[in-house]
Image (tube, rainbow over all chains, first blue to last red; front, top):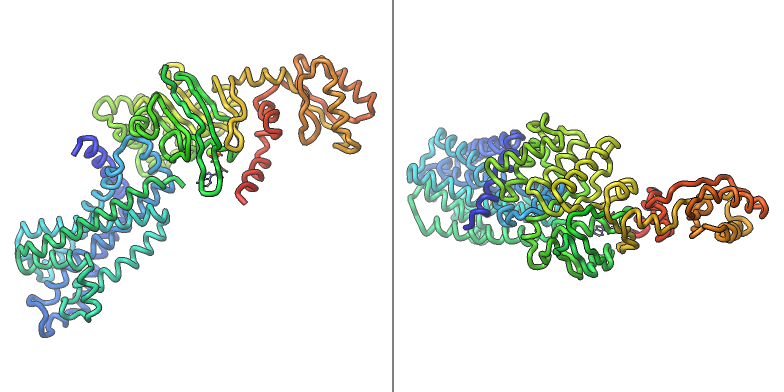
Length: 257
Length: 330
Ligand SMILES: Nc1ncnc2c1ncn2[C@@H]1O[C@H](COP(=O)(O)OP(=O)(O)O)[C@@H](O)[C@H]1O
Ligand SMILES: [Mg+2]
């Protein structure tokens, strides 16, 4: 990878980070969400854990993986809104008339999302620990969980960015993000074991990237380093990220209205 | 010698509008070149195409010898671009804005730090360099924006209406910066404007552009000279009743020394060397023919007169040009 490319990614990453830190409300809401989700879901659904056929370890141990992976999904809208802002303010044009690498422009922001999502994911893990959940794979497993969530963030924020560049509208990003996020989150193995899903939902879950990622985090929490599950998730994320980032780059050519 | 900007039959079509219709230009290095034209003439479109932001529909463009189809990346290293809207990151400080721009031009370390300080001094923003740009006044933002296009010492600077919307004082400050840059650092400047004074004061050469086409090119002095000196503006008391305008036109054209007579809304504009000396004659002739004048005035010809001569309209009448662009939108 050439030096200029990394240089561009780094400086655009730092810019995105500065903007976020100077608008701390963004961070606060990103941190509040997983706390809310984890407490609510585990309170409401806790009896599920006692159903016959439910994986051992109880509902909290089961659902933590789902809540962890919800973070990159719920926080992805920021990347879309940021690119819409940059298009409408003209800032993106200003960057596009410099020699900055186009791919680096996208990755600079996405790297920001990958790093920022580690905050709510860490909070989720800490809170889960307090609620009695454990990570069977220990410290290396925790690192791998963090990496998995961040990698999924790359793909999801990439999707939001593609929508942003395409629609040039923050409302469209926020709206579409929800419309996409909810089926992905709920028609998946995030909160309910695969065997408990109705048939149509199982069929959807089979092609739902979210399920793949949740399953990978879940084996790291409860089973061990099951590489077939983990690598399947990475393959799915890689394809998803390549498509969304590719779509964003393709549309850079029509940034000027 | 390599030309700073060279275009041949440049065309840009949006879905339904042909915004530029075959522009051919040659701009020498080292000068200040201007595009003077009303709203909707195609100035911004031209700048966006020349600076690699918009794809042209057809024609060719080279900047500093680089072909825009093959070497867009090289072009981006040697140009600085200020668009019509002031563009800054309001969350970053003035210094951070400049530094980021420098990084994207692949500058770093002490050299960049020094360059940023130098520019902050140049545009007189050193005192507020570490405040967020969002809190700057309009004039300060414009100056910071200008500075951010200069970090990498571009060879060609593209400025789209660099002083529009500024108060007279800030405008003069920007003019002075641009003159210094051009004179001391040899930066070629391509600017667009709707203001005669700006074109007149800054540009060594300019093209008048209207409806996506170049109407006429030359130095401001040459262009005004072609009109033959001063402008005599006549207002007719009774407008065009009884063909008064035609008769007046014939009278004025017959006066010795008048080189050209044009219709304007309120009457006529005539061009002549030494126009003041002709006024008594003209007044007498109107008296004899029984055509009443409300006023007659003499001024040295302006670029607005040049525009009027070539397009039949005045560039200045903001309202007119608004109606005009609106009509073409419908
Ligand atoms: N993105 C666009 N889509 C369609 N028409 C456009 C677009 N941008 C500009 N135009 C039209 O192209 C013409 C030239 O516009 P512009 O280059 O902005 O003129 P100027 O900068 O001289 O005011 C105008 O008629 C304008 O309405
Ligand atoms: Mg314009």
